[in-house]
Length: 241
Image (cartoon, rainbow, N blue to C red; front, side, top):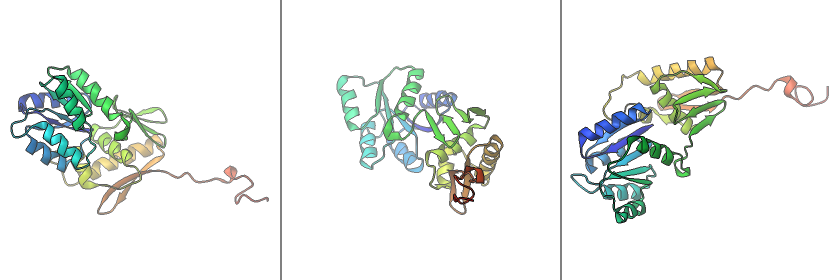
């Protein structure tokens, strides 16, 4: 899951992003409202960690504008403003949670997981499709309960596809989710990751399959199992012999 950290102290923001990375998140850093607006227009973030004291505009304005555009991305406020009035104003403006500085990064990570479990995000702790299960907190992927060993970027693609299963996920969306704003991707990187994913899923007996939509992107769906004669109530066509 990719998170945007909006923090005017770039050094602190990057330290926080690195700590989030150790917990399985991918994180980009913005140091102003202008950077946050641009980043959120380029990447569909799973959550935003937002400071309020930003150099160009107040973070609360960014939050209101985000909600005004209909974006439901979970927003966790982290700020030195810790009065009751500040907390109430942030929640009314559309924040999902609020933490005063200083704070424990362990608590921040726990709160991020908590807001991602809420119904409006359409994400629980475990995403399931067919016999595939992805635990978003432990970062484990299982097929019929057996642990599947895949690389982090392959898992990131799998999470994105399962989250939007049955619909086409564009290459651009995958690249933005996978590489964010700072990294550059090779032209065939997505195809390599998807090829590996297909092999892992097939070898593990997963009942899901990744399809290529030429020129657009990829989608995942549950494999339809063939109906055998023995499964029919009265022979092949369901009629008496």
